[in-house]
Image (cartoon, rainbow, N blue to C red):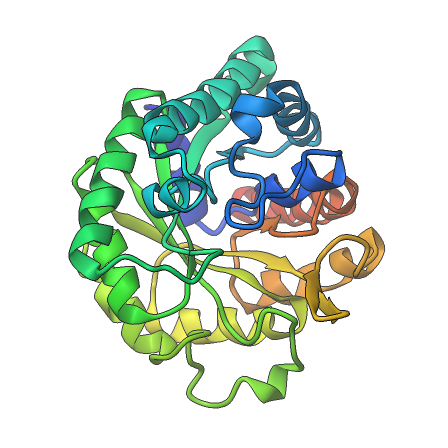
Amino acid sequence: MSRYDDLIADAQRDYPILIDGGTGSECLRRGVPSSEKGWSGAAALTHPAIVAAIHTDYLELGARVIVANTFATGANIMRDIGAPERFEEVNRRALEIATDVRDAAGASAAHVVVAAGISNWSFSGNRPDLSTLRDDTATQAAIMRNAGAELLILEMMVDIPRMTATLEGASTAELPIWVGFSLGPEEGCEADEIGDPIKLREGGRLCDAVAVAAERPAVDAMVIMHSDVRVAERGVQALRRAWPGPIGVWAHASAQIDGRIVHDGIITPQDYASYVPAWLTAGATMIGGCCGIGPSHIAEVAPLVNSAGDGRETAEHG
């Protein structure tokens, strides 16, 4: 069996799995300059050593999935920053860095899956039409597959039409796909503020988005991601009602300060980890982190996930 086959088999039997934390936000925290329209997407080209160090930190903490720094490397973003000719290069290089780190770790990381994140987000507000988005995503997914991606993760799906176009494009690469849904406002909110039924950040019911995604044979898992820690438990509960397969949580904590969304320093590692037991109890099998959740947070999460896994093994073997 392949690394990915082993991973998804464990997830399907509800074995808890540790995922990495945020990479793009961690690049910024470590000194990579932020681009107004491109965030930290160019880090694989401008600061490859920092990107590699972040992946290494997560590997050493026991993450079974490391996600290449490709959240902000979509074709629309590369056009926005005036570098469309570097679209293939930046995506390929980001995957190469992640796979090189995994391979350099040797036997201790032989089971680690390298994933590629695909987003349809725009930092400029200039979003392509659905047809262009579908074609751009198909091109990006092929580049990622050829560069070594074993899994595609659709990051921060905030509405159903754009999720559908992104999913259609990603499916052409013939790789397994996990779909990540974002709930509530970017700056966060209390759990009872996201309503019932739960809706995606920019519209459409979560249950309807799950139904659309579930129609794609390549989709193996659903994830609550880039959503506030306070709403993640309710998101997992809603996913569990609509989807029988593996579920993950990669939450964030953020705040609006002086009109700007800030992730760094908003939640302590201990406070982030305090949410993990509830996520596991609600039915999440894969636990990681998103923006602002770095290695120090994952270091607190890892023992909880490992302990839950040990308990699962004990129950299975009686």
